[in-house]
Image (cartoon, rainbow over all chains, first blue to last red; front, side):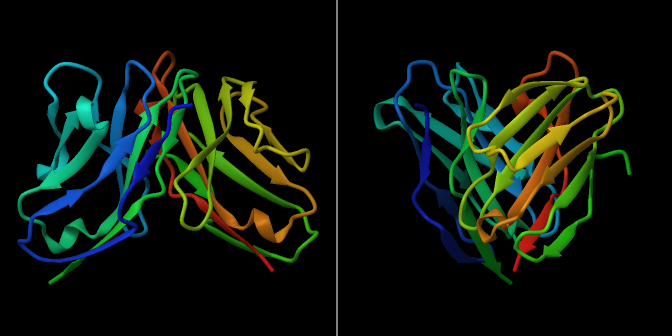
Length: 112
Length: 115
């Protein structure tokens, strides 16, 4: 079954630092991959998605992710984080049954 | 606020009691999803409605769980004889007809604590 694993459960960075959150997906043919974000006290929302084409996808708020098929990875990146990026980030994959399978999440804490 | 609304936001209950949560989807969204998120985990699919029809149920949805969407608008999720393992955030999401689940909008969730 399709699944994703996130390497880091908790990341602490200072403002202006660069961010990379790891995500690996299980092999399963065509992959549809997503990153979601949940800001404190707010609802879960879609950050970016990859279906096909350009492996570097750009999302909202300056985030991007790169699909690397050879590494089964879909890491989330941001060149310079802000305090407002403090949130929980979920990598996810759409499985064959058209269900979203979420990773365990990474809590990102940005120090001002 | 025109987003997905969930009530209550927090619920503390004693083990063995029944609880019911409500989800009001975005207007004209005929697809409605329930997810459960336990501590340290991502959301897990529970069930899915299209209008009033419950089209899918996860194996996670035990006999003690029942979801309804009687008029194709709001939905309720009831847990009977709650157990400590039911403590979790219960999320609702909705989407327009024909839209894939990743396009769904999520509510803020109902946090259940069973003591």
